[in-house]
Image 1 (cartoon, rainbow, N blue to C red):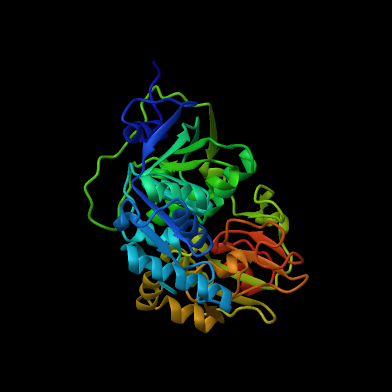
Image 2 (tube, helix red, strand yellow):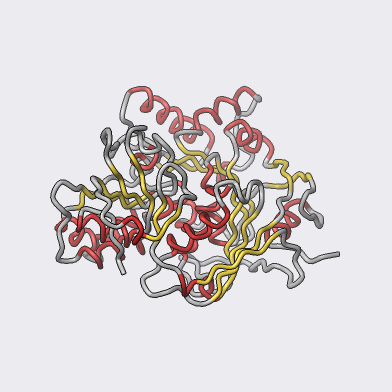
Length: 410
């Protein structure tokens, strides 16, 4: 019998027996999360199922982040519904401005290595940064988990992503992630697990690991799991790292040479249209955005401040920044990062997802070109189907807002 991948081992631990890819299993779930885009539907379905209290209120997280603060009366009423449900049931609520759901779950230790965590948001795969099995589900599916603490799933086959050699100077995790998206395509890992390995991984910060795991869903993956070698948690926790077996069965292995990578940019309207930044040189931009669950971490703001220190955002270009959480903002404030970026011409927004999904706080105009650190550039993603969204690393965005055109940071 072949060895197991990390995903197979985590699912085995939660199914109570050894499993392999392709099996349908029922598993215990460690925790769940829903944001203001999905929680109201989840609550409604939960009540229609006869639910009164979640199976584990302390492991039920409701987060107001996608339209935060509320831009209109309808959404304000949905937020009120979430607050009322949390108050009645003991579910954990993170309110306006506290941060983006995935950042808060990781930052506050609500998910641990080896956990099986479900969220009613596609980027729940971010929790693979901790070598956990994090996956997005629909609102009704999450309601059933709230009721039972269990779910069913098909054990996914795993693609091994091997990063050889150290990343070239100036290359960020976002460049690496975009390289993998470009290699596999937007459907190249559909209902499969990605397992990231290599010497570049072992030296990565947690922020960088979040970036890698986050973009797994942009390839159709069920989960993206970063090998726990070198993992350092921002909190104290007891856990046993789950490692793949040496003879684990992978459906495919792809190899990326970190030393040969260059800054990359994704062209609209698909994340897998990836090209070197140099190929897009002199493409004018109207708007730079740094934030989202993939690149709104402290590490990303530090990078932007390093490049923008003593510089100014180009005339007729705006730079909006949404830190991933209130803690990230406060840490950036203490380090002087907020001052550096503000003096350069940046505008800080409340922590949240609004600009990324186009709910408010940064919708681009007709015909405008946006260079974003986000994870999606589909038509209309940021709220205007007649705007063009390019994706890049925080370093590339910072360098580009200075020149007013897509520019390499190295």
